[in-house]
Amino acid sequence: MMKILGDFNDYLPVSREYLTVVLSPSSVPLQQRWHNNGLSADFMADYFATFFPRNQDTVSKINSKIEVKSVVSFIANELLENSMKFNNWETDYPISITLQLHTDSLVFLASNSLTAEAVDDFQAFIQEIIADDPGELLVRQLENNAEDDNHTSSGLGLLTMMSDYLAKIGWKFETVQEDPEIITVTTMVYLMM
Image 1 (cartoon, rainbow, N blue to C red):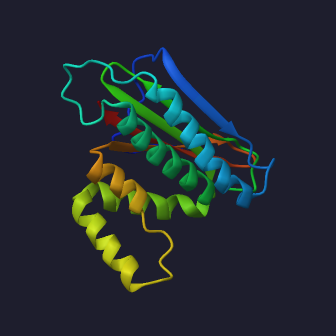
Image 2 (cartoon, rainbow, N blue to C red):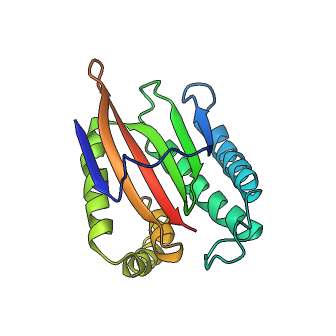
């Protein structure tokens, strides 16, 4: 099985500057991982901030070191948290996040395994957020969360990326192993600079 939703691009140009963090699901308890997510996201942000400001003539929304650190840290942390939260912990498939620097963009790729049961629900959620206006959905989700204290899967991070940072997001679902079945999702966040 392979299915692509949203703005996923399998044919990106090769990036000469990239950073990949790979996490083994079985090496550390989940609670400790939450702390490590922030450290990993901040490390990626600090590393990529050294490449900015890039071109003083650019009309980019994010061209200063401070802006880059903030945006990269937020997006990387959200992607890592989602990868951890929705990971299939019965497999030993690694969780990874890669950040690539391209001439005109930053591209994040986060990958984790999913249970077969979670795939349909996640794809339905994705269909909803790519079919509607992200800004309107963000406001609606904030209102829903304010009304329901037990609301757990809000999608606020993805909606914030799309509405506040104008990020393009896509997902690729694929079966990477048949027996036992391992299904992965790779989330791509494409951010113009």
